[in-house]
Amino acid sequence: MNLFAAQHPDENAAPVCSAKGCRAPAVWVLAWNNPKLHTPDRRKTWLACEEHREHLSQFLGVRGFLKDVVTLEEWSAADR
Ligand SMILES: [Zn+2]
Image (cartoon, rainbow, N blue to C red; front, side, top):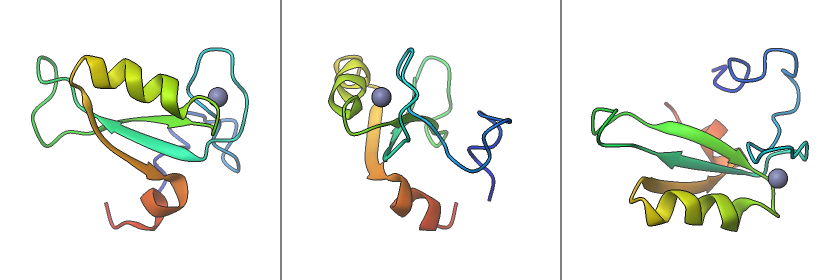
């Protein structure tokens, strides 16, 4: 599975946080879905460091997009 390499082609080894300007290593995966753009079973993902998890979760949460927050470790281990 190479989910993150697609987003960061030059950084295969270490996925980084999706927050603007943040280069910290990602610890969390935020799975979200915009019902206006995506079919219900589709999941977009943002990566977050410890610091930005709350901020990014709230951003998605207030819009009703947030589906799941799991650690990167769990996400990678899951069969998707
Ligand atoms: Zn961050």
